[in-house]
Each structure stands twice: as C-alpha cells, then as structure tokens.
Image 1 (cartoon, rainbow, N blue to C red):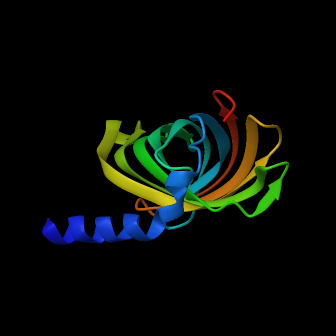
Image 2: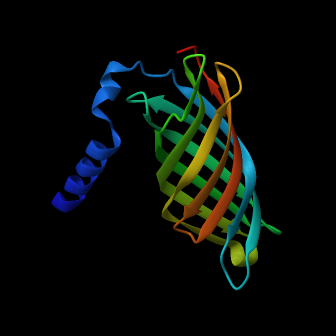
Length: 169
C-alpha cells in the first residue's frame, strides 16, 4: 500500500507542472462519445459503444470525473463500465489565446459488468482502460476528439468525443 501511494504521488508530481497554479482552471466539461470497441477472444467480438462523462479540472491541465460507458455486442452481449477517470492535457497550438489542439492521455478504473443470455451469464468486477486522444477546439465551449483506449478486459476502443464546456473559462 505504501509503495502504491509513493508511485501515485510521484506520477502526480511529474504530471502536474509547477507553473499550472498560475494559470486559470477551465470550467467543467461534459463529454459524449460514440464509436467502436472490440474484445479479444478466439476472434474479435465487435461492439457499438456510447458513453457520457464529466471532467472537473483540478489544475488547468489535469482533470478527474466519472464516466458511464455502454456497449452493445452481437446478439444479447451487453457491457457496462462505470469508471472514475483522470486526464492530463498538453496544449500544442494556441489560437486567439486559447488552445486549438490539445493532445491528452486518459485513464480510468472502476466497475465492469458483462451480460449475455447464453446461460443467463452475468459477470462483473473491476476493470481499467486508458489511452491517448486529441481534442480540437471548434468554438470557445465545444471540442471534438478522436480517442483510442486499451482496457484490462482485453478490449480496444476507437471513439469520437464531443465536449461542451459548461461556462466560458
């Protein structure tokens, strides 16, 4: 337990820049996403995926928040993920004083439930997923982002995200 706390503390110290305190934190955002996911088995099991999330900024570049993801697979295959996410952003291209292109990494951990009518099978437990994304500012309050995630359930997700900032920053 001590080692885990030490590793997490070191990671946060590296990821959260010292000068971030001088910058203004962005307002919370609401993310809606849809796309494709697949689970590795004897062959790939393809799913349609939809999700909703909220990001609360702790610093101008580090955010946390909940996410709910629902996946629809073949026949009666259904998957539900309820995660707590953390994301870190690096503004790259500044336009009109605001970041235009923002690469980021996101990771989450939480509850996973799989349901299938095959033998009334229900499985649940904990899972994690994470990966890179690229937010592109459309307006001062709206962003779009392609995102790629890899998960502990041997899944890969390619999704498109639309984000709305709740109030101007």
